[in-house]
Length: 121
Image (tube, rainbow, N blue to C red; front, top):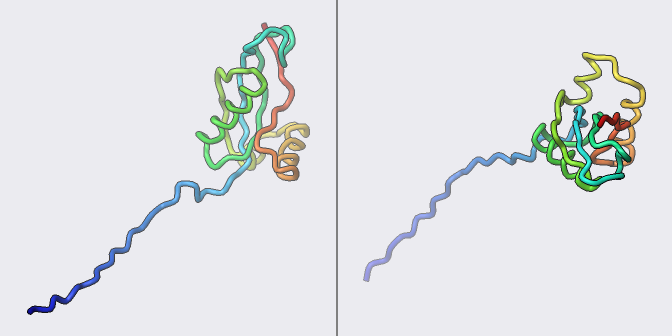
C-alpha cells in the first residue's frame, strides 16, 4: 500500500473592482423631448436643461440621467458638455443656481437634479 502525499497549491489572483471609483458630482447639458402632450414641458415638445448628478463615470451619469428623465415622461435626445462639476467650476463661471443644485445633491443625497427646463417647439 502506497501513501500519496497531497500537495496544496494556491494561486494569487488580482482582481479589479470596476466600482472602486468614488461617486462625484457630474454636470451636463441635456436636450430632451416630451413623450406626452401637456406633460412636464406643458405645451412645448423639446427643452434644454442643465443636469447634475452623482456617478462614478460618464457612462453611469448618462444612464442615471436617462432613467430619471423617463420618470418625468421625457426622453434624452442628447447629453453634451459632460464634465465633473468641480472641474467645470475651475474652468468656467457657473450660475449660483447650479451651485445650489450641487449643494442639494451633497446635503440631501439626491442622485440626479435638473435646473430650469428651457423649452422650444
